[in-house]
Image (spheres, rainbow, N blue to C red):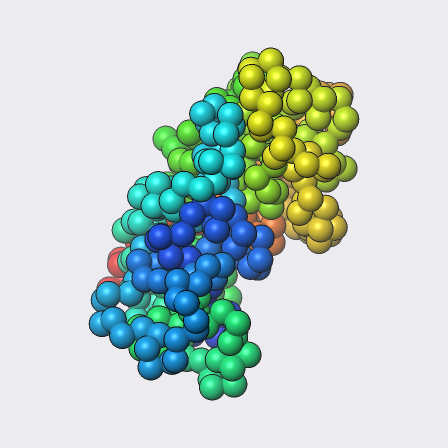
Amino acid sequence: MAVRLLSGHEVSDLCLGKPALRSLSITDTLADALSALKRIDDTFVSVWNCNHSLVRSHFPSPPPPQERCKAKEDDCRCVGRLCMLDIICYLCKPENLSAPAAALRSPISLLITDHSALVSHLEPNASLLDAIDAMHEGAQNLVIPIQSSISSRRKSVESLDSIFHNNNRSYCWVTQEDVIRYLLNAIAAFSPTPASPINTLNVIDDQNLFAVNYDDPASSALNLLLLSLIHQSSVAIVDPEGKFVGEISPFMLNSCDEAVAPALATLSAGDLMAYIDCGGPPEDLVQIVKERLEEQNLSAALELLGDEGGLSSWSSFCSSSSEDDASSGKNWKLGGYSARVVRRSEAIVCYPWSSLVAVMIQALSHRVSYVWVVEDDGTLTGIVTFEGMLKVFREHLKSMC
């Protein structure tokens, strides 16, 4: 039944209602990417090897539709993706903090090399099994052609070059979350697997478990944060006994802006959690960031801080996410480990005996791609990601073929 269900549907079914991707060109700069990320309602912006850019015109004047893309189908492709965390981590390097304006003039190509394998093109008539196979091979964002009406093209006249490629085709993302949500809607077809405890399904990942200590410099998590982007996970914060305290997640940092870079480069992991709390950065921490920048001769980075310490886009996110805290799923609280109240640094956790379907619901309801696994005493033992969940469903399907 499950095999028939998935093979009978095309990946285009997941594209219904999705907006067309806004794109950047590989020749754009990080400043262009930063501008684009602040203008679109998406975590990632797509990067293409053709001159179609959301923020920069590569032509003296808008070309006529027939001239917009003369390239063959394979000549204009999405070659990667960028998010705010990519830019924040790049700015955190000492040489870039000392000259952030110059760093933002760097080409996008510096940052998408490691992300090229995370993006894959797929035709709209491909089956959902094909999509799951592509994700099993490492793709996280599937680029799917979508149909665009003439009226929608006219409404998009201000950014035509950033939407239409390959003979005026537009595209959308299909993500791991989209597929997991679809599978949840058809979960009965996979019974009894979804009701099984996750510790019986080989879905708990304890190998790619990224963690730093509460008192460690937040900068020690930079490389781990970039790895967590690849694994669709996060960086845990633990106490000296290995108990789970909180996290520094791409999800949180992607909701901030580039002004968080100085805090990430100068604060401890625990203090960074307080810094990006929904209440706004405490004045004492903002002062600490400024003092440490000056001590390290990084005064130029003070320009990044602005008036709100880097959380100008965070307040709107907090208001929309406050209701999520009351939804299903368990949040792990700091308890007495720190005197600071760290609301949004709380992370979603489950237990080894939690069912797969319960973990799926937790992740989807909180719009994250992972759930931490802890023991009763709070000891961190692993993480369950969308990638691991998809592996379970894929194996289930293969066993039925």
